[in-house]
Length: 68
Image (cartoon, rainbow, N blue to C red; front, side, top):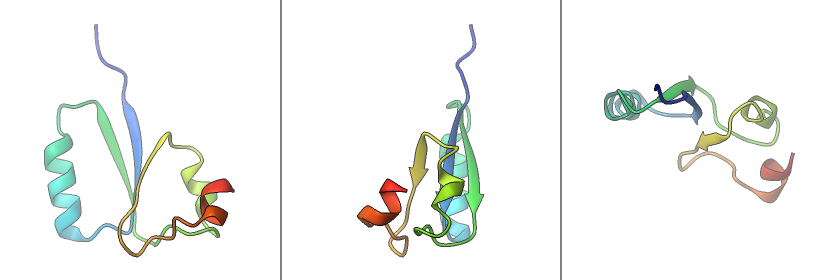
């Protein structure tokens, strides 16, 4: 039996973050999709297709962003 793939949206990650996250998620069933822009209310529609979203310090996690 195989584990289902879990897609994760990763916003505004730096190259060193991507290297670390990609390496540590290998073989876990997690599929990382990197977006090279800051997560905010204007682009939150992209995140709606993911059950899991990874945000970094410059991303906007305000109520307005999270409830769109």
